[in-house]
Image (cartoon, rainbow over all chains, first blue to last red; front, side, top):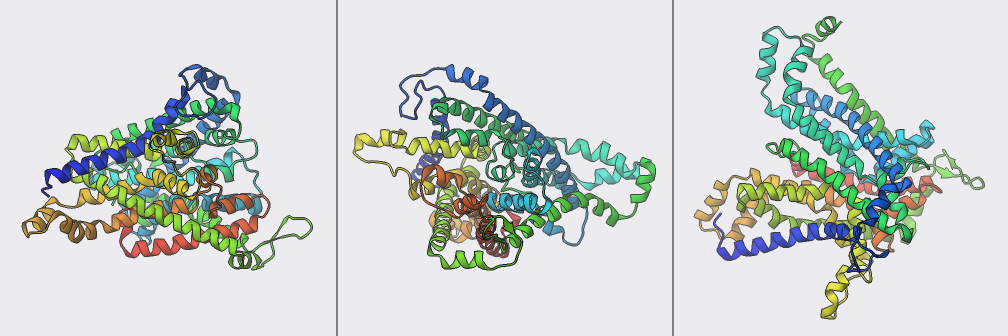
Length: 272
Length: 284
């Protein structure tokens, strides 16, 4: 479509403003992390790096970081397994209810987090009699992380022609050997991307986590949330916030680099 | 062992599908849908009058309370209204950005813009709410910018919730619309132009109908995620939303919390059914 020069300029301004709207709030947190003030007054009276050292020494923040790391890694491992299995079934076989699978997989992130949280909380505490713990956090996170692995792997398998697998079978390889030597190497990028995104999703989740965490379990987002109400912790909260941003942005960037031809990085994009 | 296993699966596609699906479907159907069923059942439970403990007897009291007490109705109404406003705002912000990305930008700029939109999509929900809490506070950045003009920012309240939610869920709208526009052949736009349509006309009569399912797909996220949020309302307003009521009751009155949590479920089930009819699932 040929757009007039004026509408192109207008559109560029609009895009610039929208990007500013997206990035200014995030940058403000970066500035606050270096502020000499203990309050959120703008502009900060001076800049310092002392809070970074203090944050790294803060035992609460460190424990929370480790808890988040454990929860993220465990949830990612489960999501990787379940998401890949589901994606292989959907993209390599025809069966009754095939369309329902992608709906089922997306449901845990399409429903509000609070619904998933309360449902799991009620099931654990009232029906199963399980104490809330790191384990229950992992169950919750894995549930909503399956979708990102599923989307990435399904997209890759759809592009990978079945003729490779057929050729492998014709040459005498069994299904497991074909999987190991043909299918798996071809979907390695999608698996890594799915895992990175699942980890990113798990690492900063707070709503489902709040309802599935035991009294003693603090993930990093929960730690930040509880420390909002402690004014003297504010500078450390700012630093931790910056670390959380970086730790969730880096995996996304890497995942994008790995799968940029397939356009499946967003949770809202599948493999249509 | 591997050989014998392979023989077992050979030529039995049903067995193959079955064993692939057993794990994921078991997890999601038994674990997840099962939990949702438990939630539904728990919404009919009650609290012991003296003990205050959850009692697993059937009662409609929780629903009666939600329906008859005006405060709950106004909370539900306010939440749905904010969710609708957020969705509308995000559609309006996302359309030009997505259009620019898909149809105007050079491939290099497009790649950069996709990354620019995607990275904050995943980055720390809580930190983003926190950033806005700082910006909107009395001596925050917004008032500092507006002060020379003698204007004051909205401060904390419903407007703040609307801004913050629109901000947080915006990338969820941009991505499906971008994907929808990307799939739209440029030849259709040229054809419309050759037939004499102005850009605005092409947009309304050609582009919009074709990317409508993608917009609906994005709106599932903006609408649903706003509907259940309680963190943003708690940090930038003092108003109650559906999520706040559920959160406040989870420890002391689980049945009531469960009953109120079914409100967003019902709304989203209807929403998803409509979205499905509109063809949104090919775009989610």
